[in-house]
Length: 370
Image 1 (cartoon, rainbow, N blue to C red):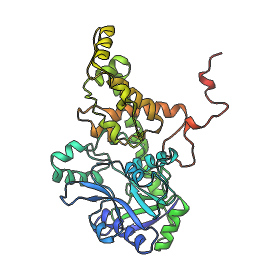
Image 2 (cartoon, rainbow, N blue to C red; image 1 turned 30 degrees about the vertical axis):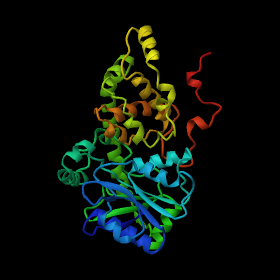
Image 3 (cartoon, helix red, strand yellow; image 1 turned 90 degrees about the vertical axis):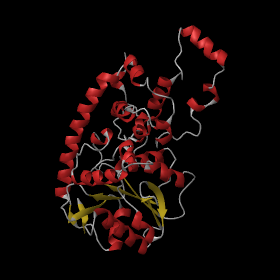
Image 4 (cartoon, rainbow, N blue to C red; image 1 turned 45 degrees about the vertical axis):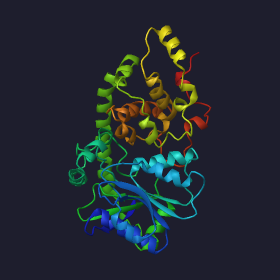
């Protein structure tokens, strides 16, 4: 594997920003989609940046995930390709969600350059908002100490946060790099062309970086298996699921922030779910009791069924839950099991079709009954 080496100037963030500025100068892309610090200085918003001066407040790796990047990209290209060339720099889970949405015709990637970056995780949104200054300081430690337990639980079990686990155009390697370097690894001809045009062709060996990232991924896989095994004992089965989601207030925040939940009209928010008082009384009489709000568990089971094959484990749902339910961690168990059945990794490859859109003649013989 070949890549290019960039010497760090001031900080990792500033070095990446300078690289993006060169891309704008050479018109390799017209705009950059990147999180930018808001004027108050305590939050970040996705911004399409054309003016290089605005990049000074940008951060390619903010401490929190306030909006899943794939949702931001979808809002720009859902109705068709962009007229401008866009460089979108995102965390791996955001890139993977973008690739999944492209297969669902919710994102058009024709004029998009996807730039991924090794991710140490993101801080829990609730913790960050309690003290943003402390959160920023904590995240600086997180970048230095990969595996730091200050990040969200779903991030601690993510095994696709570093290395080339996805098909972006260009990947920024941070984990395993030397103290004064970052790596730029092209994964497509588009990525190679960008490096060549800027004047830093991919000629350096990335073998050492690749070895370190693979070792880290193996550690994460073991951690993921351990966490999921412990959690499965508490949530698997109807009774356990009812207990787990008993505190759900049916706010549907998890659905609203999920990049894969893109339906214009969700069944659970349709008129069919708005019953009259007589209907509720009839249901209560037939069951002997009726929990309000009703059908809470059905909503979560419906979401699991709807998007488990494309779930990238970004954790946005768990961040948005006001009741601190382990939504993302539970969905990771369901997602992993569903994806294993089809031997499918969501967002790994643009060319790989969604499992439910294709049929293979010899599939599922192992579960057939004579």
